[in-house]
Length: 343
Image (tube, rainbow, N blue to C red):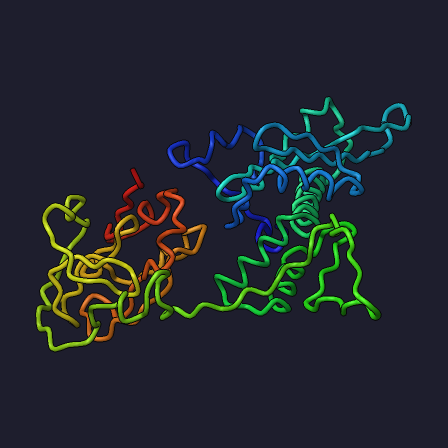
């Protein structure tokens, strides 16, 4: 996405590369991860139809879509004064799944033969790659899902979410127009019509405050502990989190449906929070690395006034959305995060 891939080269280590994606020698690799799920076969197939008038070459295999843009370069041989031409191209790979990865690789110019007379090849290839990404996001189902994600995760209105998408995709070809208002119903008597097959405009998603009760019960039933009190246990706790804490500690209660493992003595001692996504609040220093790393926005800040390590913590309010990518666990400086995969 052009606004987020400005002159950025992503270096990926083999130990953490997603699905066997590795940087190649003398090539530039750009990666953008979109925190939206795209697993339905009909949604994946719709991307090709959405882009059929874009002028791109599109190939689809299993969970991946390859989108190629070709362009011609012309020049003059300085020795023979003959006109020269070369066809160059870049390909963006769309990897679908629990999250969507958009990947492009700029090959060295020598890959296309010996077009030594081509000028500014890497800049043109980079710009064209970003143009493909902007077009894919702006004009396909991915854009609709990203708008819905902004509404849910960032509590944006539909109008603001659409505006944010447009600002992030300035290079899109023939950009798809989206409206924040639904068209008025037709006048006259109602008639039965066949539903349209076109992709509908995104529907506004009501905001869910952080204090909303978990599904299946009231707020009181899902919150049995308090963050305030007269606790004076302010002893420093060092990481890493004990991976065997579930067999050593007892449950102390719940907070908005999230299990809390004791002992707790607020505000000085808060214990370990979570079941699959777990954080030792007594080790956490609120550096925010886990919140920034999470591709599906599992966490949001929770105020914990009076705690000696930090007065806010990453609260796993959307624990059920975790995709077990381990990103938060791997980037935590004090090593206070532990992910337990279901099953």
